[in-house]
Every structure is written in C-alpha cells, then in structure tokens.
Image 1 (cartoon, rainbow, N blue to C red):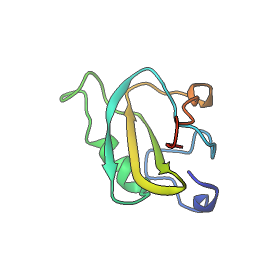
Image 2: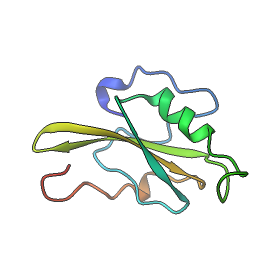
Image 3: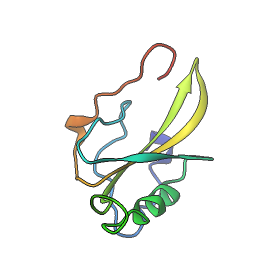
Length: 100
C-alpha cells in the first residue's frame, strides 16, 4: 500500500503483512497477476479468493498490489497472486529503466 492509503481497512481474511515500501516482491508460489482499473485492495483480495485449490496448484493466500509508474505517471495497478506466504525479504523488485 501507499502511505496515503494506510487508512484502507484490511479485506476480510487478509491483513497487511509489510509495507508500505517502494518494491514489489519476487516470491515463490507466484500464481499470476490481474490488472486492475484502480488501486483497489478489496478487489485484489477478491481476485485472490477466486483462485482455489480446484483451479490452480493451491489456494491463493497472499497478494501484492502495486502501481506501475513510467516516467512519473501511473500506468497500471497490478494485483500479483501467491499460494505461499512471504514477507518483506522478497520485496526486491524496484523496477527497471523508466518503470518504477
């Protein structure tokens, strides 16, 4: 989450694990991502809840919501989904080139 979004309540069955930091994670258990229209914590949680053991290798238990910024302009909001819990030690992706 961004600092400005710290007042957003945690979605049911989820809690803020770490952040806010300026990095996305590269964790084990990656299940793919969903592009969202806006920075929507509840929407990302809903996407995670739709990934179950019946349609993937395991249930989604962790998500990482981040905003792609290119040349200072927000370009997309990305909800990355994971079947394995992680912590901030895997948050090492700070972008490349013009993508931050």
